[in-house]
Structures are given as structure tokens and as C-alpha cells.
Image 1 (tube, helix red, strand yellow):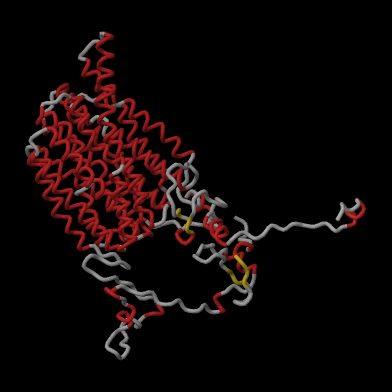
Image 2 (spheres, helix red, strand yellow; image 1 turned 30 degrees about the horizontal axis):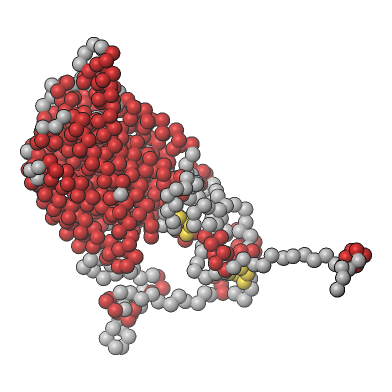
Length: 572
């Protein structure tokens, strides 16, 4: 009962304490943070799905960790600065018109050039993202947009204004690089929310430019030039200087994009190609694959009636309030900014509700939400066109802005499902549809009265909402169609063979409501397993997490399995 003597303690054998094994849920959590064998990273801050090329399954908004969340924040910031520079001159168009002695048609010609500048470059930027990655493409777009914006004050003619806005319009391609970047970083299950949040916060640059340039910088510089007694009209001098600051911000951010971000979760495209970890894509095959899908064309037209409506409204809103309600430049710009500020939540909400609809009703839920967004968007645009009071016009403007952004978020919640192998090219083509729509609607404003142009734009939008009925993506249900699954090589003829009871194999797999039931997976064949550890290390199979707590991998035969947690994956 007493304390043993020291000699006894010295003679006792040493006891080695072995920590208990981690609980199964902890092992699974650790495995979800592990990188694939071909990644430049060993682990990630976010949980990832290795079956989808290490894309993140979560959106940690308050994290800047590389590669996933750093790319997310750089994607929307690049988009934001590009839009800030692109629309910097928009709230000042009335001053530009007065200073240069331009007509309404000349002003709207420059606006058409502004939105037309990105029609071709959006298609090309999506293709180049597939080849070179979103990081370099974002940097190139920012630089090309930022430098001309700094030189806005040198414009003195209508032709010069149109050329300047044509070049700065290339900044609209930042939308495609933004959507490609986030699609590369997040799984399809959360891509709708990620794409919508990044695009919505990036689109916010258009609204911020209205109030930052039109209601803050313009009166500030006008006061400075008035107090300093500078030669010339203070208003004329002010609009020529205001655009320098957005242009510089756009150009400087280029450096950060290049130096401190990644093209994909596994690293930069250039390095991966040098190591033989990526194939060099064919531009022709990418374009052909994107254009031969009828869903691409339907979404292109629909995107023209949401993002095209947004661009046309951004160009017209301040002029509309000045002409219809006789407001000054500062007040009109402040009211027009309410349209863009809905991007803080509206586009993200549209993508989030699209993901929620997908969780409950699959692709059919996404398409139903798509139809509702476009139909209500058109209705409220027509209400805005008929508003006779300032309060009514502002209320209708904010309401239809919510559905415009929601329709944009819903559209790019569907895009990742079309053809994952050429996501950049598909996103570029559909994104270009937004600029084509903006060109068409800008022609309406150039040739018609503003109220009439708004009403016709709303009627077109409500009409094309029913195009959602024709969208039918391979492997998913449509609003009017059942799911179509292409047969595999070992299933040829199985779906057409009759089972003797008057039903085919596909009909037997159909559950209640015509939904397909998954077939039970076949037992693995022994010859599918590697014969040795050396063969396993040579082939370097990617580690993918599954719903079980401990997964196994076989070396010699199916009877000799060990947990994945103790398998050496080979050099990274």
C-alpha cells in the first residue's frame, strides 16, 4: 500500500503509451482535406472532392487560403475592378455630351460600341481559359481595360469616344474569367452559389461606378477646380480626370492576380503541362463541342435577356432619370446606382435558390426557377416603364434588378452541367450572348423613347422565359422530358431488350414518376487490381473519398486490403 522503493521503479519495464486510433468521422474529415497525388499541395484548407479534380465542396467566405478561396476572392475582385473601369464614364455621359456637343444618337453609338467590344473577346477568353488558365486571362483583361480608362480625358470627338469605349468594353470579358475560375475551384453541387456570389459581387462594380464616380469623384474634382481657379469649365475638367482613379485601380490589381493565385486546385496550367499532368487542348475541338449543343444556344439567348438587360439599363438609367424627372448629374447617378447595388445579394440569392431547387428536384428544379426568374424580370421591367412617379420608378427599378441578377445566377448554375470538359468555352459563348443582347437593347434606346424601349425590352424577356422548356441536358431531366442516359459499352442493347413482360430494361429501372433508379454496381474483377506495390506507385491512382469511414485499396489480391490512411501515395 505504501510507495514502492526507487529500485523497484528502475527495474520496471518502460511503458509506451500508444494513442487510440482516431474516430471514423475524424478520419473521414481528414481524408476530405487531402490532395490528390498530382497536386502541388499536400492538403487543403477546404474540404474537397477528389472525384471532381480536388474541387471544394464548401465556400468559406471569410478565408483567403490558397488555392480555392484565394481564387474565389480574386475572381470577383478582378471582375469588380474591370466593371468599375468599364462603366466609369457612364454616369458622366450627360456632361460628356454637353462638353463635346454630341447628339443622343452619338452618345448611344458609343454605348453600343462599349457593350459590343466584349462580344468576340468573351468567346475567346473562355477558350483561352481552357488553354492557359483563368489567372493569366484575368490579368490580361484587367490591363487592357485599365490603361485606356486612364486616358479617358484625352477624348475630344464622337469617334474618339466610341473607340475608347470599344476598347474598355473588353473589360466585360472579366465575367467569363471569373465564372471559369470559380467553376474550376468548386464542385457542381455548390458551383451555382459560388458562381452567383462571385459574379454578383463583381457586377457590383457597375453600381459602385455610378455613385463613386458620378456622385463622389465628379463633385469633388469640380469643387477642387472651382476653388483653385483653374482655367476652363470645372465640369469639363472634372469628367476628364475622374476616370484616372478607376483605371489605376484596375491596372494595379493585375500584379496581385499574377503573383499570388492559382489556375486550378492542383496548380497552374503551365507547370502542369510541363510535368505532363495536363493535356494540351485543341481550340477547334473545344469550340465545336460548345457550339453543337442546342442548350448552349438556348442559354445564350436567355443570358442576352438578363445580362444584356443589365448592361443596357446601366447605360440608360442615369440618362433616363435626368430626362424624365429632371434630376442633376449627381442625383441621377445616385438613383441609378440602386440598380447595381442589388448585386450585393440578388445574384448570389439566384444561384443559391438554384442549388436548393437542384437539391430537392434536380435539374428540373433549376429549370423551373430559371423560368420564374425570367418571366418576373420581364413583368417588372414593363412596370418600371409605366411608372409615372419617382418613388414608383425607384421601387420598380430595384425589384426588377433583383430578378435580373437572380436570372443571371440561375443561368450560370446550369452552365457547369452542359459540357464539363470545355466549361470555359461554353461560359464564354453564353457570356457573349449577354453582350449581344445589350447591343440589341441599346439599339432600342437609340431609336425609341426611353419608356417605349424599356417596355419592349420587358416584353421580350418574359417571352424568352419559356425557352427553359426546351433545355434538355444529357444525363438530366428537362421540364418536359425524362432523363436520358447514354448507354455504356457494356450496356449496349440492354435498354432496348424486352424482359418478356412488355417493359424494356430502361423501363424496369424507372421508379415512380419516371425517374431512373441506379443499377447496383458490379462486383470488381480480380484482374482490375494492380499486381504489386510498384505497379500501384507507378500508376499513382487518385485517392477519392467516399461515404464510408475507412476505404481500402488492394495490392496483390482482393483479400489483402489495408486502410487508405496507411498507404504511401508515392512522391507528390
